[in-house]
Each structure stands twice: as C-alpha cells, then as structure tokens.
Amino acid sequence: MGKLYIVPTPIGNLKDITLRALDVLKEVDLILAEDTRTSGKLLKHFEITTHMQSHHMHNEHKTVENLIQKLKSGANIALISDAGTPAISDPGFLLTRACVDEHIDVECLPGATAFVPALVNSGLPNDKFVFEGFLPVKKGRQTRLLLLAEETRTMIFYESPHKLLKTLAHFCEYFGEDRQVSVSRELTKLYEETIRGTAKDVLDHYTNKPPKGEIVIVVAGKNK
Image 1 (cartoon, rainbow, N blue to C red):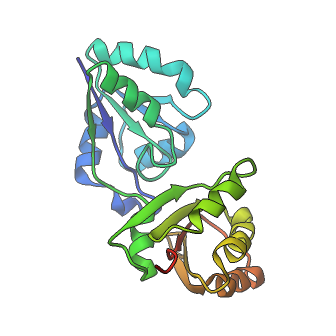
Image 2: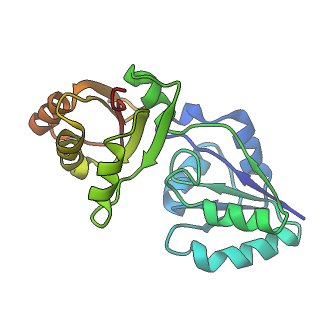
C-alpha cells in the first residue's frame, strides 16, 4: 500500500515550509490541493513538478473512495491546503478517517498552523486552551456563545475580516465588554499585527480601522 502524507504549508511567509515537507512534495506520486491555483504558486516557487489534483470541501465526499483505491494500489499521496495544516478548519479529516478505517498509513508532518503563534503572541494563559475554529454563521451561533461564556480555558477562533466586528460585538454581549481579547492578523506576513485589550477596546479599534487579511482571535476564559 501507499501512504497518505498530511503536509503543512506556510500561512504567509514561504520560508516557513520545512525541508522535509519539500522532500515529500517532490517524492510523492500525487499532491491533493485545496486550490490548485494557490498551491501552484507555492510549488512553482520551490520548483516542484509533482502532479496536482483538486481536493476541497465541495468535492471531498465524492473523491475519497477513488483516492483510497489509489493508495491501496501503492500510490503515495500528499495532502495540502491553501495555508497551514490540512484538516484544521480545512479539508482533510474525511480522507484521513477513511485511510485509518482501511489501515492505510497516515503521516502528518509538523509545520505551520495559524492558531499556535496567535495563542503565544496573545499573552493569555496557554497551558490549557480550546480551539473553536469558525463560529456557526447563523444556526447554533447563540447556543454556542452561551456555552462558551462559561468556558474557563483560553479560547481560539478563526474569523474572516468582514465578520470580525460582528464577532467582537457578540463577545462583548455574551462574554462581557471587559473580557481580554487578542486579535492577530496577517501572521508571518509583511503587515502582521496583534491588537490586545478588552473586547470593547479591540472592537473600537477595528471599528475605526477596518481589518484586512487572515484573522485569529484569542479570548481569555471566564474567571473561576
């Protein structure tokens, strides 16, 4: 049988790719990419010519069975996402689970993921934390926020720039305006920044300065 390699890619700065990741991407038979255009730029930069195939949230249910057959036939396959570690708020879980069920080897390489530097940069307790990813957009959002309002561990969220103000306003409403919050955006890129303060302070900051780029929000847990 072949092996599935889960390969993290840089979240911004191309220098953050590992030497081992480059070796795997050069040596496998196929690379599964969330967006072949985005990943094509990465592979071109590092002169990697391995064949790519699209694998994203809209087609992964349909392609898993065929990919399992390729792996059973001896093909080695690498899975990458547009940025960071696959399966962390990105496609990857379905194929990984299918490989485990079929006793196909899976190897996840260590590498870039956005929430770790955001957590460390925040200055908030990081001995225990919960990763929430993206909050529900509509259905279930209020229920989730009410539940998280009682969470005592540091919480980590991903958010898009056009929804950041809404999410910060909800944190003020459900967690309290004085809850400590840290917002990191454009991590590893030229305009990287981290804004820290109360939920109200950070909301006011981004109300006056509309955010751009990829965003990670770190929120202090409820005081015990």
